[in-house]
Amino acid sequence: MNAKKSLVLDGLLAVAFVASLVPNLTTVAGHEWLGLVVTLAFIVHFAAHLRLLPDRNGLRVANLCVDGIALVVLATCAVSGLLVSGAVLPAFGLYAEGYFFWDPLHATAAKVLLALVVVHLALHVRFMTGALRPGSGLSRKRVQTSGNTQGSEPARWHVERGDRS
Image (tube, rainbow, N blue to C red; front, side, top):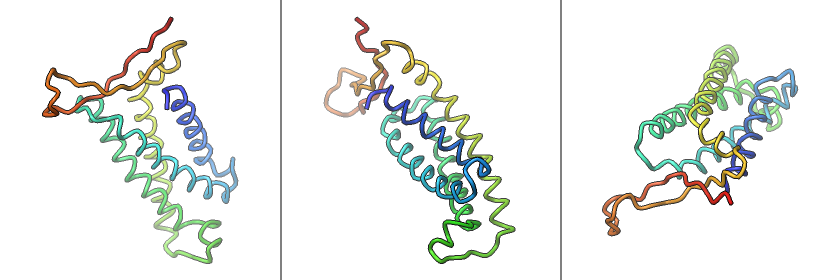
């Protein structure tokens, strides 16, 4: 998938995430169901982009750390959200006790997740601005970093600009 299509899909995910943060905007039931969809979309997003991060430079390591923490917080938010659910669990005939534990945990996890998403976006601002530049033709290409083609050194990814003519 090219950079612009990826950026559009990521933008749609960001809009859905922001909408899921405001239960008054979507109704509580809509918040819960949208939250499940956004959780699945985030997991797919992380998995799809993980293959693009094999380098060990500082920015990529920071991104992996932020993404790893975000996945843990996302799981906490999703599980606690399900356990305080007023629409999703009853739809399956289930009920969970412990509202006064799970509800504050859910609210805190949602706020921490929002902060981590902002950091994640900040780590990707260079990619986003490059993809939005007219005629950027950004693509990720796997290249061998040394003259050795025997495979002793792993191939690395780099962003290469396409022909602008």
